Length: 203
Image (cartoon, rainbow, N blue to C red):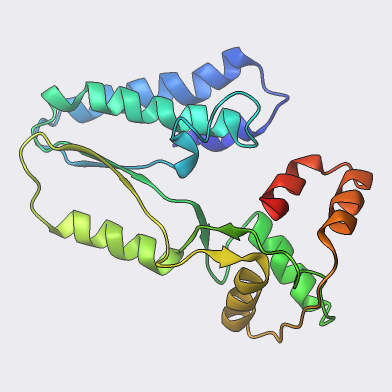
């Protein structure tokens, strides 16, 4: 699903509609030609209404994922096999892209990192758990015309220091941290013009 295109604020709404809604419409049309098809839609926790509201960090991405859920749920009557949408949070693992690539680069410095004082907790999902869920769904029986949404996450949430430590363990790097007062971190992020990261670290 091409919801990744929704991350790019330079894209017009028209292109976003073509990349997300139209392609999803075409996918649904193709699936209903095989009425016994069982569809697993990997959506995102960002699709939840309280996560994709106006001004949310992942607003466009979340709205695109929510749109995929709506379109597929609307086709369930034509899909005897049904559709299940999964809403994972950020998925991490040894080669995860995006923010986790940045984490690995910071670990490569082999220096203590100033994240020990950040107490906000966030949900993440390890790639192995996601693939286990997909494998289970693919090999299990579903109720006829099943239409469900499930939210996934690792058993416990992580502080920033804990997710750094978890990534470091998989990446084979030592991780050391030290506390820095949160107001200083907020000030640095604002100076770096990264205000969208402030709430991630401080709530």
